[in-house]
Length: 208
Image (cartoon, rainbow, N blue to C red; front, side, top):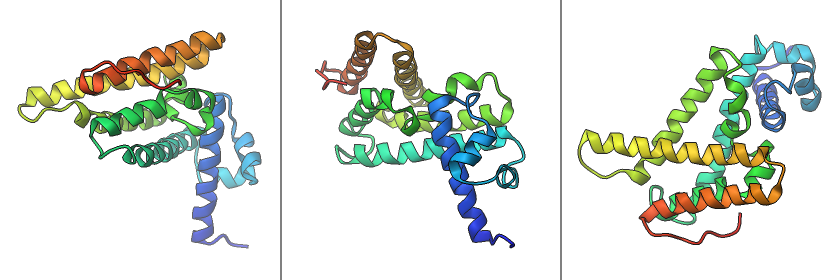
């Protein structure tokens, strides 16, 4: 029976969502096409009818994972304050640099979960990460921006990159640390540092 365009689109969405979840949990190298097919309840051939290579599938999974997590975090942060406000930024930090995020890689940020693998792969996967790092920088730059010169805009961009490096790095390291107390302390320390930078005043963050 011929697959309709509507069904084909649904199949693709299911494949990508499944791959995104598995790759965030196990890493890109730890998930084969067969595992994705089985988890999605589809055939190996059905996946290759949608994606020419595993790299193409991984790139689509990265894009989907980042978009899904970002939409959820933005919606939650918007309850704390207007986008770009200190309250909004602070809530993003609390959600990201947290025990919940550390302990649930399958539902979290693809950059933290799959980024360490990216250097081992080709252009398709690395470009997918690069595109989304650029959007993350654009999201965080307004929180640091002061109206005015081009130099001020570049300074805001630098501050955003520092923030992203701290956030992503803290999750990667916290997941790698076997000692749970030390892992928790890593998250608490980074979150305190980032929240202090929201308005220049020290804050006592909630437990991770």
